[in-house]
Image (cartoon, rainbow, N blue to C red; front, side, top):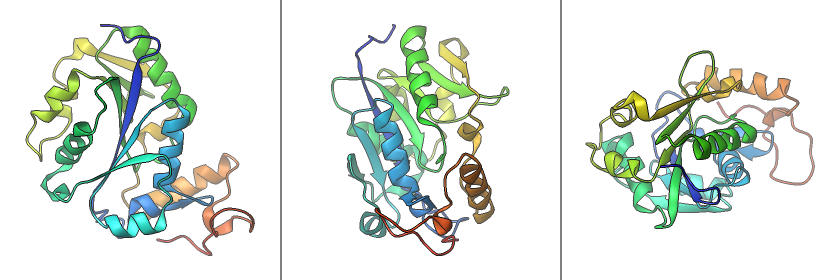
Length: 226
């Protein structure tokens, strides 16, 4: 069924994990003077998502204390260690009853452009498919857009089951939407990943947080946090 032109779309931002390989909360990495989590919240909202549901688990108090989280609907998920699907399920429980569609967004895809998200949503509205996935150069990335009906399938997963058990179930219902934004493929798992992403961010014209000029907003760190 085609999504209506004005149907409400929510974002579910998964930010509950331990960041074990990064050894620092991915949510609190800095681009410019903005934490990763605040950047993702802002980009989702600017692309038309309402609400932006943020699922927190590991180091929740630290994240709340060091990020703005403005504009997000916060969901505490103390059972995050059960698996990533358990975090998605916690977010889905907070989905508004009138949300026709949801954007599933792992927080560590930090540099995806707002225009990319808006294009995914527009393509999903037009396609009549149940799931829309960004695909640069033949590779599937994140975030993905799902019809509300797909929520039931995610809710039926075991807490530690991979989401691809749902997204890979029926190729006929999936729209692979071509995008030029390679950042849909980049996740921030290690310090090396973060440093590489900072180079991309700087090349786009953004100032790496530890080089940002003094001024309004949050203080710029003197060096990368990891």
